[in-house]
Image (cartoon, rainbow, N blue to C red; front, side, top):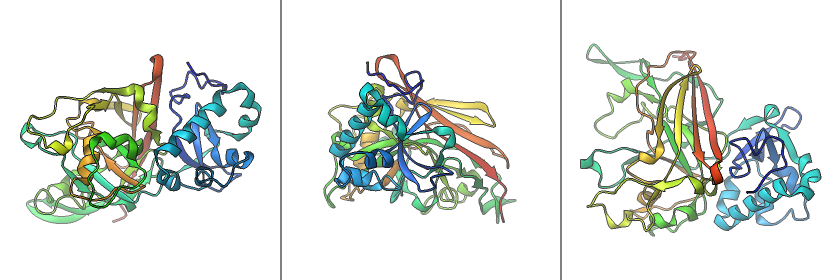
Length: 363
């Protein structure tokens, strides 16, 4: 099994089998830059590129950006090459002296949004048997995707009070813990993408807290669907876990419906063995197994293009609510979403956490 020379990394859920990508800065170096997490350290990809012989190829140019978008656009061959080079730098003893100069302790890092999300679609993960014909989704608002650590201002909107619609702060702020999938590369307009092409287009996964105002939602159950109840904020983890990191977490997905459309059929039907947890103010309140979803991430990707819509770098789609339950959150509450998955040979990897504090409404 590959081991890492970074102290403590082999015992960490952010081990060499994980290697999530993020964007960070420090108090001394304020320019945001791409980094790869290893244990309690961040490998600074900007410094790594500047220290190497190649600085002008497409991958090296992308790794000097303050966001992951250009790297996403290069496609799967480039993603695999960069990941292999990072693993070599962190495991080869002869590279330790030079690569150790590229490390920043996680405690010194200021985390930023890992990418500019260009489009956002949110699916429904669970469905009644009568609805298991195709994955249902609604378009989200990319401008309100915010990174972990950013406070949430309690939203205001219309809710029912004594049978009348009144405007004011939500009284039913709730959590929806999801997994988000980040798309790279670009498909052709008018050409559907099959579920079997999932790994060709999906770069990695993040955790999401897709906040919901349940009382606003009561007025949006008919007509055009959710707007005020969902569009005020979706919090995402600062670290993007590569899909390749989840190979050991593949698991058989539930049996599909017999009348499922042909474009949703997979030659290898699998989900991911992720376990999600929610904490409120440091107390565990709920958990769920992501693999129980009736629709796989690959089927959700296929649904996005079934009508001919294209995929492009920076698109993110949410899996839908993995953790069920209802919590009316109070001002000052701190919500944390975490997840773990099995790694190779009995190891464990962690997805980047999402932590958010609720602030009072400004209305």
